[in-house]
Image 1 (tube, rainbow, N blue to C red):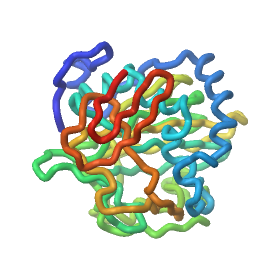
Image 2 (cartoon, rainbow, N blue to C red; image 1 turned 180 degrees about the horizontal axis):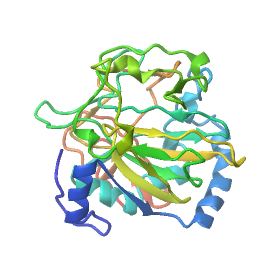
Image 3 (cartoon, rainbow, N blue to C red; image 1 turned 45 degrees about the vertical axis):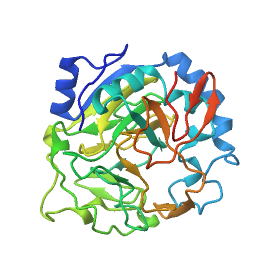
Image 4 (spheres, one colour; image 1 turned 45 degrees about the horizontal axis):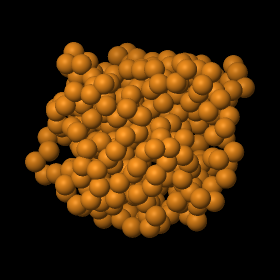
Length: 323
């Protein structure tokens, strides 16, 4: 884990950094006005439905959950490409990770009326749902931490009734799961699992299969619900114990979150894989590339994309991030 190395417009203050390192998350922060976000979402929907330009469009669909074609849509959708480079996000993330920062993955997390909540989980190297069981990210050997920084943006309102996020503050410092273990994928279990009286699963997996201690369970008395208005975002370590409430179905509106994941350029991304295999689906990584959102890449061990959109130039391996 690196420390703040330069002050930019939206950098976290020293007190905010202290709070972040203590509890494993910080926010929410304002990014878009609610009306602005709603207009952007309406314009975005047709582009998301059309997956012909998506880099995983030729992959095997994920049964009962989603389609890998909707992963990493920042690589073909202009609005999302600009979103992940917004200084309101990047300045804060870089004040945590250091000035040389990349975005390696984005994902949509829809929750429809009646959908179950997401079960408590942590992610360090993201090998737990990979068909190859190889780590998807590898930190340097001398690093004192792993995981990734996730920036979760509420593209719609995220209330408790609609399935907002939940965190257990301070839980990011201890991994309760062994990602070298195997979880069994079962598409028929989606929306069918109840735990302690709450409908809560993990997209066809059961995270309890990875517990280091089979008798351990999260202390939900310490859990906090992260209610967010449309257009806000929150920052958290992937190793933080996090979950979400079920969508109670009191409204016919879906809850839609967009997660962008960031790392320092010292971390290797997909070093052992040429395909993405998870949640019952698979696709080639042939068209994949990281996006350098801040600083420079001096390590030369990751692949980067190069495209220009709305004045943002995404650099190649030897380039420098420009905003």
